[in-house]
Image (cartoon, rainbow, N blue to C red):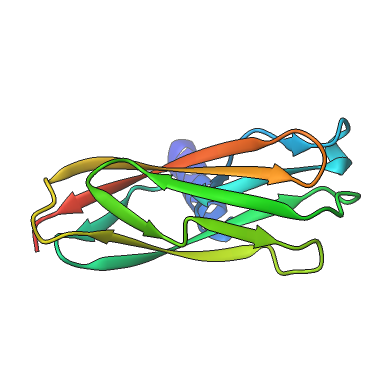
Length: 135
């Protein structure tokens, strides 16, 4: 019974957090002057010949007020759009990416890499998995 309640609590936390994980911190020296890139936690499924929209965001520390340039690269076999995004300090931190698998894409697991580089400070990166499935 105790195990079941712990499982339900963990599942609720995953749903509340938006099912995203964050990579290592970039930006400034202290935690409040940095940022992280939040990407989907669970594998994203894309059918051959179709596209899927995925949300990526940056989580800013309280005192992190800089622009961040995101560079997005997909492993060979899938495509992602856009590949470069500038998130201004005054902008909302969310970006919608479109992941596309061609009709003849090989079935299997692929990765999408997201690198965030602030105007000043250290860059950081995160990645998420995309699984191409049959239509």
